[in-house]
Amino acid sequence: MNIPIPENVMQALEILGKNGYSAYAVGGCVRDSLLGNKPDDWDICTSALPEQTAECFADYRVIPTGVKHGTITVIIEKPLEITTFRIDGDYLDNRRPSEVSFTRRLEDDLCRRDFTVNAMALSANGEITDLYGGQEDLEAKLIRCVGCAETRFDEDALRIMRALRFASVLGFEIERETADAIRKKRQLLANIAAERIVKEFTKLLRGNCADILSGYREVIKMFLPIADFSADTVRLIAASPADPLLRLAILLSKSSAEDAEKMLRKLKYDNCTLKYVTLILESAELNLTDSRPQVKRLINKFGEKDAKLIADYHLYTGRFSADLHRSIVDTIDDITAKGECCTLSKLAVNGSDIASLGICPQNKIGKVLFSLLEKVMDGECKNEKNALVQLARNSKY
Image (cartoon, rainbow, N blue to C red):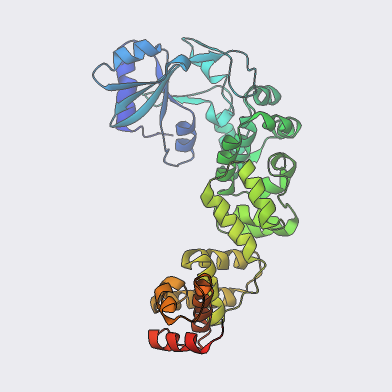
């Protein structure tokens, strides 16, 4: 297969080659290219030491990104990471090698990589170095560790999540020995920072994740013990859009909003995710219909955008029929388009107006305003100042 190499990457490979060093595009860019996908990034490995690489690119901007581990970044149109061939030392914390040493041999560098599909290198002339059957595994749609799977996971337990993520995103199966090692070594995930696990899990949820969720539930429960992996839940996820927030909410749908929030905080999820999942779970307690007053209350409580997300969630969890979902979304759009009052900010009177009437103490003004808003949302009073003032005067507070 003739893999097109971007001009800036080719330029970097040629500069290193002209200076007497071997250099290759390596890893995910080769994998994605062989799959017919456009790589997001192109990484380069080379026999040149970091200082030698910097000398080769003296005419370019060079950033010492991770010199200790052999990596520098060269700006040729955009950033390119160039890393010296290396051999990893002992792994003491199931995450990073205690030390690295540099080597002149590409073979030494490839043998330390995680999976066969990520252990291929591409030269400037288009030749692929594939020592571990990566192309065969791509053809067979398999995720397989390079060498002994248990050793790979002992070295870096995050590879457990990466294996699950690649299988999900690529729609691959996990080779049996690798799968067995994932289950056997799942306890090692306790040694991995929550942020790193969440990053991989979020990517996993964007893929064809149903089989991974059901087949590796004991692994995922290591960090998300309150998740529900029942057949019904996994089936809902399989039928849902590939939205990680929606799918996370479905996984947690059997939990209370309070328990879900505690769990997500422990995993250090961002505030946006916390808000989305908790409001979704809170909405499960509401008796939602497509009546206009009910939809206005939904907008009042959650806002227009989140009201639609809630409607989507209840559609994909089977609580709303397609007709009810469409009716609610159409009603939200109609209310918004007509600028109908659903919030205190749109009410035709404010706190000063109510205070000037002298009908209630200062600490009751908010209660009066919300009572008026309820009447407006129910269609019992027009959102007009005179009408609202008259209603307030005639009411008892």
